[in-house]
Every structure is written in structure tokens, then in C-alpha cells.
Length: 322
Image 1 (cartoon, helix red, strand yellow):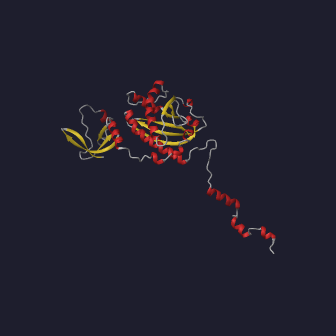
Image 2 (spheres, rainbow, N blue to C red):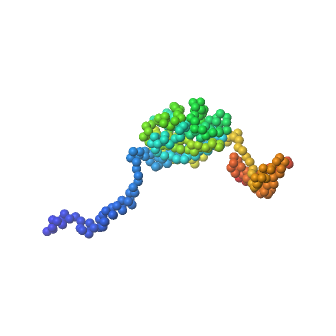
Image 3 (cartoon, helix red, strand yellow):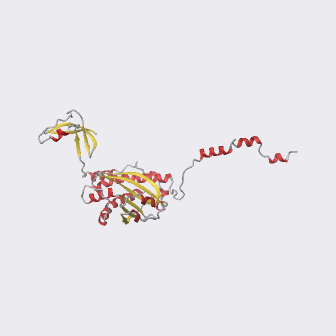
């Protein structure tokens, strides 16, 4: 007849020792450290987008930067480069505090999206754009003045180009039309969501001619929640090959844009005294030999190689390589 105590004792002492570590406190702590590393988390401002969704936003807005780099030179008649810097989640209040004051901010509504969003360009790029649109060379004197109502009205032409391209980039996901519903020059006057609401901020660096500045887009997360699941990275991949008709039309449009082209010989060291003594009629003997190659610059960047030659009694440069 079996002992009742043995029935209640389901595991032997050896089996219990095999299941439990020798030092339970140390063993449990070590296992926890290996499997679940401690990660800081802000419960007051939780991330509303997953890493995959942020990655999708990054790809979409990187494509937007490439589209703007192609379309803005036609509008501004200047070499334009737009580069995506960052895509982040933060509170709307933090976004406003990160802006310079004054700046230029436009409030945009989209007919297929529940809330409006904002596009901001800082003064170092906004005023050169205004100057170019008025026929100037895009000069900015560095003064921190707020744009006038007339200057904001002029910037609306630039904004129209930006929003049209932005809608086109979003088209594979959601087809919407944009409308300008307001503008501000001071960040604390902008109101699209409460200050503690989470927004996605997209920051670009823009270079138009010799001027450089930043542009940012503020997208409330509430605006994205209805369409974020439709994101498909392949639908806005930058590897798409443009149609031949679009390429031909683009080349035809930019064919009237002028670029400075220069050929540079080897530099000649000259003392200050010799430089001060130079006069009209003096001849400078360069160190450049006739058989040596010549660098050909297009807008201060080396694009071709060449060699010196003569044609109709004049010294010329013949392009020999890219």
C-alpha cells in the first residue's frame, strides 16, 4: 500500500533542483537581462507609428525630394537640390519650439484627409525664392525680418509647385487635392492640432543657386492613421523608370537654362609684390604645358576633361572625356 505523502509529492528533490537555478535571484536577473533589455519609454508621448511605417514615410518623402529637385529648377530658373534630412515623431509643441522666429509657415488642407498639415520654409531660403520670382538673383541679406503680406502672396506660387508635386507623390496611396487655408510668420500662432498631439515632422535641406536653407512638413498623426495601412513601399519606389515622353518633355523644358562653363589651367603662384606691380600689357607665363589635360567646370563642378588646341587663330579647349 502506497504512502499518501508520496502521492502528494509530484516531483522529487532531484527534479526540483534541475528545474531551479542554484541562485534563483542571480539566475532570473541574468536571464531577464539577456532576453529583455531595458528600453527607455516616454508614456506621456508614445510613438504612434511603427518603425516600418516611419520607414515607409521616409521612402515616400525621399521620392518627394527627388521630384522637387527636378521640378523646381524649371520654376525658379536656378540649379536646385533638395535632400531629405530626417523623419521623426514628436509633439506639435516641440515642433513649434524648434522653428526659427520669424519664419514662413503655410497651413494646407487636403480634401481626402481629416486634418490639415503645415509646410514651413525658413527665411534663409524663403527670401531668395521671393527675389528670384521677382527677377533677381536670389540674394538674401541675412536680416531676420518677417515676410510681408505681399511677399507671402508671392511665395504662394512656389507653394503651389510644392503642393502639386506632393499630391502626385501621395497619389498611389490616397488621391487628394490641396488648398491653402492660412499662413503665419510666427511659430506660436500656428494651430493645426493641440500642442501635446504627436506629429510626424519631415525636414529637408534645400539649395537654390548659392542660397541654402531648410523646409519642413508637419503631418498630424491623426491625419495619417486612416491611410497609413495603405503604404506599399513598392508603389513609390525611386527605382521606377520614367516614361520616355516625360523625359523628353523635361529635357526640352530645361534646354533654355544657362550654366556657366569654364576651363581652368594649372594655378600660378605669384607674390604680393608682383601682383601689385601688374599692369595692362603684362604677360603671365603659366606653368601649364600644352600637352597637359585641362579640367572643364560646369557651375564650379568638374564635369569634363579636355586639351588645349588652336582654331581660327584662337586658343580653344577641346573636350576629350567625361
